[in-house]
Image (cartoon, rainbow, N blue to C red):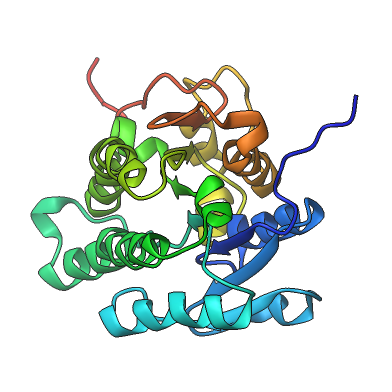
Length: 267
């Protein structure tokens, strides 16, 4: 039996597509025959060398830029977006407790990691209202969440708060709203733990940090971008996951929680 994902010629918009999980997701959907619009912020990078995809620049913090992104995607890639993969995000590399975090950092993280997804979903859903039945039939929003959204992350509470909002605020809310526009529309969140991406590269060079991060993970490995991208494709597939809606899918090797960070010195 051949496995058909039902994504041939489906228009997929992937945000933050220039590196890490985003770039691997582009390759995965391309192999499945989807029409891909790849969003980037400032540097298209390797996206420019991938044949058959449409690259569109946009600042997810800016309302007009996001609206233009969805319009441009439709104009350049054969019609409205059917599958929206909200992958972009920022994880400030400086370890900063809430007590020491300045408002500028907090506001920037929220603008990119939470306001950006809101603006993208709003523009996507508005365009979906006037889309064809064929586009609506495969309508799907997939957020890239994080174990930080489930367990929290000390010294990165700005990031954790935004991911939690996507996973436990927007996902269950939007899965009830999207069906008012597209009766078979779905909204889910795919939530990785640590992944070998450029954003995490420096942290993952610290062996002690990796050991601590994996301490409660039965599958003792850091995920690859392909681990996440393949799960996104499965959830996007109307053939494989057409009855999966409003779910938080943890792709974290079975992680059960976090050790105290920094470790306790108590005897």
